[in-house]
Structure formats: structure tokens, C-alpha cells
Image 1 (cartoon, one colour):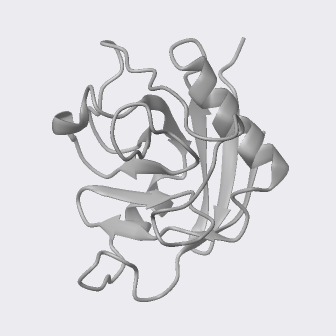
Image 2 (spheres, rainbow, N blue to C red; image 1 turned 180 degrees about the vertical axis):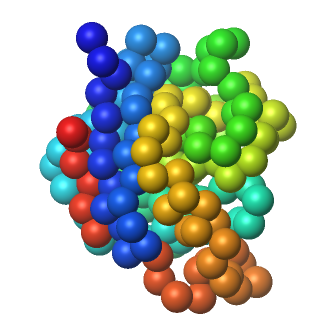
Length: 157
């Protein structure tokens, strides 16, 4: 069976991610269900750091909001086999151990210092050039894009 995929149409173009359902089933279910319901539609990428990552998934746009399909936070699914090895890794943003909600990030470079702290649950499988362009946008002193970068629509393929 092929890995499930989610397509994200953004204000800068379209990319798709494939999900690691065997290694992170609960995290993938959360992302799939939120995508299917339209939760991520019109949500901004509120934090972009060049050569590091792009972060989104918070409907408040503040970096402090969001919820999971489980009603609150849920536990990490960190494995020794999935690491932040390069650009295009899809991982959960959190506020510490076992605080996953709806926010996620995509790496723009290897970030081994995040291994063991964030659940890796997929990778960009098409449209990486879009993610790279997103990672190069102008940001303010708080890493917020000067010009809004948003998810227009996210749906499972």
C-alpha cells in the first residue's frame, strides 16, 4: 500500500507530503483528519526561518493556538529511525514533550538537534521548490513573513 499523501495548495504554489503512518500512526491520523476537514484552509505559515524551517498549522496565526482531532494535546511518537536528516522533513511543532496539537513544520536543512524532541511523521514528496521559495521570503524580527504566506487548501490525495 502506498503511503497516504496530503496536498497543500499555498499562496506560493502547491506541494505534497507523504505520511509515515506505520511509524507515527496517531500523528498521521491527526494531520489527515485536520486536512480532510478543512482545518488548515486559509491558515498562515506564521514562522519562517531561512535555512531552518517553515511552520504553520495554527488557525490563530500566533504560534500559540491550534488543537488536535483528539480534543487537546497528544503524545509524541518519536522513533530512532526517523530523524531530521535534511530539507523536506515534516514534523510536529510542540511546546515540550507530549504537547502536539495541529502545528507542524517542514525543515529546510538538516536539523539533528530536533531529533528526539519532535515527532517526524512525513516528508515532502513533490513541490519541494515551493517549500524552498517559502523559506526564502522576507521576515520580520520575530520570524513572521512580511507578506502573508498561507495554506489555501489542504486535502488528502
